[in-house]
Amino acid sequence: MIYLTDEVVVHPKLLKAGARLGEGGVSQAFHLYVMGIGYARRHLTDGFVPEGFVSSCGVISKSSLVAKALSARGIGLWRKVRGGYVIHDYHKHNPKASTVKENRELDRQRKAAERHGRNGNVSSLDIWQTRARASHVPRTTKSTNTGADAGSLTLVTKKPRPFALACVLMREALQQSWHVDHDGTLANVGEHFKRLCARRGLAYDADLVRRAYDAVMVAHTRRYA
Image (cartoon, rainbow, N blue to C red):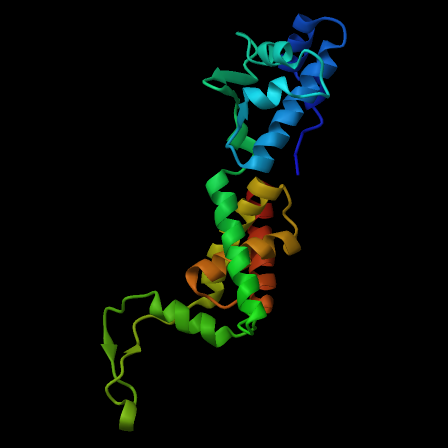
């Protein structure tokens, strides 16, 4: 999926590239520019567009001349490199290939776990508390058990805070959601949240997610109000 702002069709650099090309030049520059983004996203090239793709583009006539206009001095929407072109500021609006591959692998692992009956989408606050407890190194510990478990250690200096941990992950998930998908809805942010949970070995608690999402969004609204 390609994301474009409503200003791209009147972008000064696109208009300037079109002027270099003459009649119909703006349309040609726009189409090749967008097709380059599409190629880079589809093939995860981090913004690189090979010369082979440009020269074989049948949709745009004289596509090589259009590419030169896009990369001309004073325009710089593309940058000429060995073997092709690199889209300027590609990662400003598009994720890195490594991030996309990592998210795909996490999603593949999650689906594989579901197929084998190890669904991570369980509602278990106790697991969150266990993981949160394990993430802290206590300054002072003592045994509070008797009998067979008398030798075990129990955290006494700080209680686990699963909601606080969920809010930290939610802020990260929200940033990824806007950067990758330009979509800050709960459904989309929740998918990024699941991946972050899987990466840290945390269970996914749907109720905790909704609470954390509401809290983070309220804090964000107050900050920029």
